[in-house]
Length: 219
Length: 207
Image 1 (spheres, rainbow over the protein chains, first blue to last red):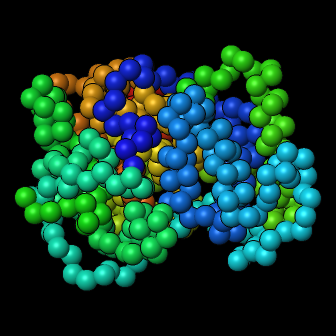
Image 2 (image 1 turned 135 degrees about the horizontal axis):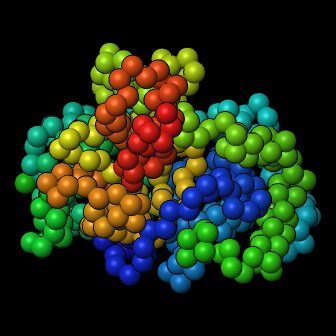
Image 3 (image 1 turned 90 degrees about the vertical axis):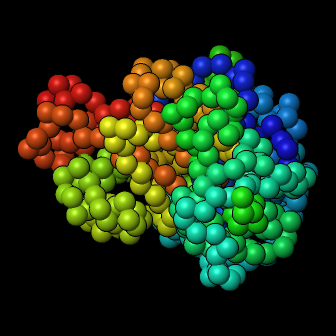
């Protein structure tokens, strides 16, 4: 979807402000939100892709005026209710009012912590031979799906070169519309900055995206 | 906007979020979905165990051992897994090496994807709208916000992490560190230089 989350190349957000000696969490609740998010992933309340899509679905005004962990928190509440794991009146009451829903996996215990603090694998057996090879000139498609995609707007309809091939991975665009993992070949595609940003762009800048095969065509 | 901008309305805002978050945790625990001790443990791990010191060990090893450096560039997750002090990390890590001609920078314009297995949780600036929006278009300006100015003829190579691959920058080993041990070298390696937003410390800063 062409949402405000797709920020590459936007102007107006000001300076980047590094914070010396930054704490891991600025508030105690941020750590709890992070931990709960990891736990809910373990319980199969959602996948990494559906959790990202849920954040993209917040209105631009909400997205832009909330902090990172506030967005995670709102996402958690929304998906917990949607999945029927908790109910809105329970959120209101601040306590459980009825028994738990039967879980696919869980409960989440101490023994499960190691698994959620190491990233999982998204590689899958390929659907067939790869269409492109390293060095191929490709063009990204000019697509504007109204659902989740990982092809950023600034890199649509652009000519680039395949730099790396990463094997086949879970395809986020399909997972988020309940079409399964639908594995697709994943490539690193490199662009000259002038192809992305015009003649005035930095001539010594190259930018790459990770592009799933359905995003690409031969140039 | 970014997480740290909320420091101003500290009192009421923080306590309201604290209460809302606690309410959800209470419900999840009462329903038996999660064990509170497991949540405590996750927070503790990110606060004390999983951080940029892991990445620094990896880079120090790459600076010291040409065979490891080669292995790291060829299959990053596998190579890191061979380091006893680090152990297994998630799949799809990709190390990219700075040279006198090319400086690498990592960003995620769509959310805030970050190599957490080797760097811990991302800093607020990495998640900020400014970093996410500007890095793919004007990385040299972004670098000046970190006090870094590169020669105009240095190519900047930006990696937008739009899938589950996770990039780790291998900075250049500073001159004047000949004969340094890996643990000495690791002190030069900052989190920011492994994202490409900074450079390693000057040897005189840690000697």
